[in-house]
Length: 457
Image (cartoon, rainbow, N blue to C red; front, side, top):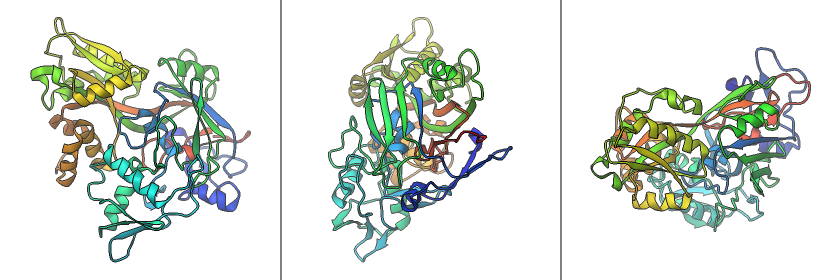
């Protein structure tokens, strides 16, 4: 893993091999100074960190769920998953789709259970896919028809295997049990959620479909501000520092990591913006925020700066009150956009109110979160389009545009603007290895581990 100073080479679905063999998977840790000692992945230990995001719910079928964008790979799996080469392979499915004359048949693995102990069956898998479709995966699943249930298999009335694999392989189409409750998330991933007073504890899931995690647990606490994580990491209380390595003095041996962007901070334009509520205006305001004002928040590559201010009457910039990182972005955006008699004031509000007003578009400006719905340019396009308007995103999926698919170009035709990336980036203790997700975004938490004493990173 070059970003963290360690490159981890692993087989597809390595933890499943761990279960079958009854031992840890062999992983080679490569660096300018080769690691010494055992090359078997250590089993056990825990890591702790603070994050500036709400941890009260995890829903893999929503593109505005920042907690799931960061930690969803620890909890949820889809029928097909990418290996380290980027190839989609069976995960909760027993094999690749097979034609049976009526469509493509996907047989589920037998004996799979969710972390709660509930059995995975064809009915719950079909219901989960439809839940994803009616939430935020509608555009991504536009080419995947509703499945028919046939014993322990799902039969999709279609012929294109590639389209089906692509559709069912997205993390946005992760499989959850019937009656799924985001406040009590239940999945087949390497961890299960245990409540904690100030956050959550991700504990090893002994029932994990692809094998349990190497770590015993990940303890994640809610950070009330952006300095809490840095202070805790600097003092040695935390193993991972969000957005940096230290606040006052460097921690001995600390190393940086950058697992890439997992979501975006987006600016929404609402009906109360009046004549400014037009496509492209939100992106114009977003481009008017100097990169230097947001760079400390780790918002990804710099963008072309084009000065722009809010031209309407004084307005509130709504932002959810449980996300300190997003509030800081809102403050920087408000300062950039404001001029005398045209002030923009951040107004943190409860998530429930944000959701209601977003649906009704009863606001002038709102800072929100959106995630890609899949890999590549198409996943980016459909993620942003879904955040803007789900119905239009479905039409766009059927007739995708040609040419430049750069995110900040796409949003010039929408009522949302891309402000910056939400990245998993900061500092880590020297004995922690954070393998990158096969999706190219985020951390593969199930394969994260702590090095044994005496092993050099």
